[in-house]
Length: 404
Image 1 (cartoon, one colour):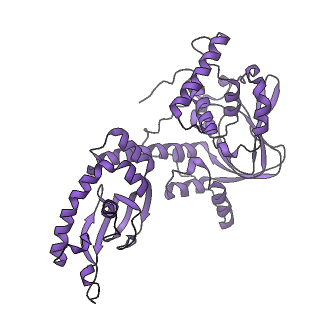
Image 2: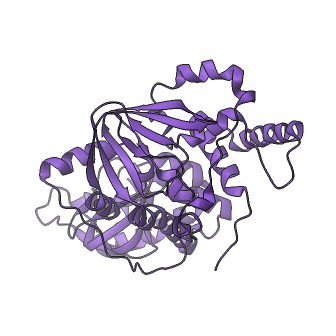
Image 3: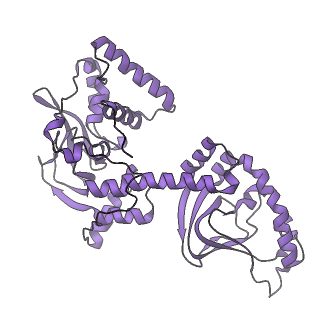
C-alpha cells in the first residue's frame, strides 16, 4: 500500500517531534496545541499561504541540528539564551531538495511492507576490544532501547568504526542521508546555513548520536557536523538502519499489539488499555531448563508466554520435612497463556516454580504496572484459584499449599 505524504507534513512533524524530545512536556496534547497555535499565529503574521508552514525560529534551529537525543546536545544551553531575542528574525535554511539524487529523498518506506528482508546482512568484523567500546558507546542511545538482544547484536555487527580528525566534515547540509552515527569520543559542532553564513547551533561533547532524522524522514541532511577535535564514531548504513531499527521497531510494536489482543485474559480490556500494556511490557528470553520463578520467592512480575512452553512445578508444604518431597508438575503454559499472577492477586510468596521447556520468550509486566493496568482482570484471575485448588487436592491430597 502506497500513501502520498502531503507537502510540508514531514517538516511540520519533524519540528514538533524534536521539540517534544528536547523539552519533554508532561502533557503531549497540551504541548501540541501550544506548539501548532504558535506556528499558525506566526504564519498568519507573515502572510504565509495555505500550502506552506513556517516553523518558529527556535524549533527550526534545534531540529536542523538533528539531535534526536536531547541530553547529548551538550553545550548549546548558553547559545539558546543568547538567541532567544532574535528568534523572530531567524529564517530557516533553504535546502534544495531537487538537486539530490531521488533514490533517497523521494524513496518511500513503509515498515509494514516487505515482510521478508531481501538485503544481505551487513557484518563488519571487529576485535573484542572494538566490540566492547562499541557496546559502551551504544548504552544510552534511545533508538536502540527497544531492540531485543538478537536485533541489537545485528546492529553491532553492522556498525563500522570511523576515526575523525579536527575540522573534518562528517556530514554536510543538503547531502543525502547515508549513515547514522554514534559518538564514542570527540567534540562536534552542529552548523546550519543562514544566508551566506554557517551558524553553529549546538555541539556534541563525547556522547550522543546524530544523522537519524534524514534516514527516518527521507530528507537531505539538515545540518553540517564538523569535528573540532580528534575523535571516533561508529556508523550504521542507511539500509541497515531502516531494516533493523525502524522496521524492526515498527514490526515489534505491531506484533505485540496483535499478540496482546489475542490473550484471552486481556480481551475484556478496552483497546486503549491494551495499548498501554504494550507500552509497559518487557521481553525476556529463557534457555531450556532455566528457572523463571522460584516457589517461596516474593512476587514482582507477571508473565505471558509469547513463544515456547513453561513447566509449572510445586513442592508440597505439607511434606516439607519428608525426603520424597520432590517437585511435581502441576501445569504447562504455552503461547498466550500466563503465570505468576497468583502471588500478585493474593499478595503471598510464589506458590510454585516455573521452568522453561526449550527456548522460551515471555512478556513481562512488573507489579506496579500489573496493579495499575490489570485491576479489572483480577476477578478473572481469582476465579482460577478454585481450579488450582482442585489440582492440588488431586496431587497432594490437600489444597492447604495454596491457602496458607
